Amino acid sequence: MKCPGCYAYDAAHLGGGQTLRDLNDRRGQSLVDGVLEVVDRLKPLHLSIVGGDPLVRFRELELMIPPLLSRGTHVQIVTSAFRKMDPTWANLERLHIVVSIDGLQPEHDARRAPATYDRILKNIAGQRVTVHCTVTGQMMKRPKYLAEFLEFWTPRPEIKKVWFSLFTPQVGDQMPEILSPDERQQAIADMMQLRKQYPKLDLPEAVIRQFASPPHSPQDCVFALTTQTLSADLETLITPCQFGGNPDCASCGCIASMGLAAVAAHKLGGILSVGTIFRASIKIGQNRAKSRERLARKLQTNDPLRILPEKQASCGSLEQGPK
Ligand code: SF4
Image (cartoon, rainbow, N blue to C red):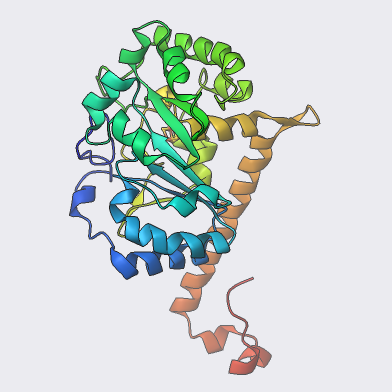
């Protein structure tokens, strides 16, 4: 598949030099074991499995989902729903299926074939899914586009909720998908209005407000600071966030980033924002990590038996890891 607007296979996605196609993706049992190993090591509260399309590896998904859920992790699968999903997924607590839909049928089908509307409707039958639509400049050129989208999707019993993101470009991009400042304002006003008419539109006002003032940079983005994106070789990190490359934060429209920014903007006791506490905590964590690295380097360059206090210099009393 090569969907217009997809950022994952861009030349700069991994920072230049190599692309996702150059990586040695894990498959089969090696992928299942590798994902479980990463989760056991990093202990994330939430794991989002995105594409390409994760359903390309549906056999591996079917194997890894039960053990992932049994670890207490919330698992989100972001898919185009180009194929049917395991019917048992509909009832699994902590499993969230998000179906990416690029606008109304004519626009979506042109961009996303073979994952057309007809196919999505067949493939999500019996499931409980969230619809996610990335709003583009083209959509905002047509009045009431978002309302028509909600009108189509929200009455369906398979649809639990609907999310909107705004298209996020890379720095310097010139593309029709990019919203002009007026279109961005209009999208924000539309979402504010539509959330009252369509309860399945799961966008609290505080989150919608964040679309008007996105983070200035990845260092300012709570989402980028609290998440880690790993490619399918389970080694290559995608930075600074899931968009990779050099994303234009000032035009960011990622719902996840806006959601966490809204949490960070919340003031505890009306005085101190959660973000202030969070950033201070990150700083402390980074300083501690640097101290640990310095200590580890020192230990490597010295004879450990010389720098340990005499009474600890035996196997029985040596504690693992620096304090
Ligand atoms: S999620 Fe948005 S604001 Fe955060 S680093 Fe990525 S592009 Fe920038």
